Length: 258
Image (cartoon, rainbow, N blue to C red):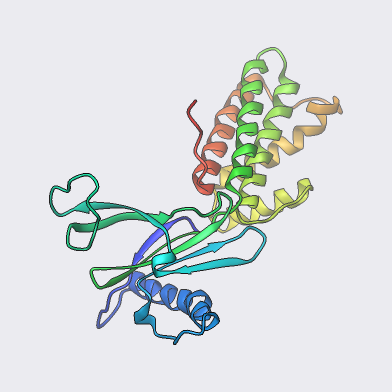
């Protein structure tokens, strides 16, 4: 899964790897989305005619491409001089673009933004999906974690059961951010192991989920002894807290302040 990045594409005699990446991404954006949209509208495949574009990527498939004046883009920019409120922003009074994103795309959609500024093309993209549902899952993970923290001193088994639920929800949330869903423990465990093997998530997260899964039967059903002490559970509390924080950062869903 890709986090949101900004790539400026400029000409160089010998592009470095990051520059080559930007050139390749830009080429793919035009070939996959912008040029087919020009063809659909019966327009010539003239890339110079496109100075802005937004591609909304719908969860589960499908997309919508808007071009030029249709493309609604919100940007944070550095002004070149003092600008009075209400003054239109143009290349003449903007020194640089800091960040930009589409305005009006669905909360659960991924997106790509293309814009030309001062003669140079820029791209921004976010391929993380289902943020509203992901937020619900991670809020629930916080609730399970809080319940475990409040109970572990006097009720270890329920605390461990709640910690397992919280840890699994972090995996479910990250999978959903990639438009993957499952109802099976083993599928979540395999996804996390693969992600850890590829260094996409900390290896400790995979270890913690495996340990909690191994204690699940004893914790939930009193099926055998619980092989975790209160001290160990306290350490797992901290680890699961880190798992939730990591999942929020990775899926782009911060905690909401009320």
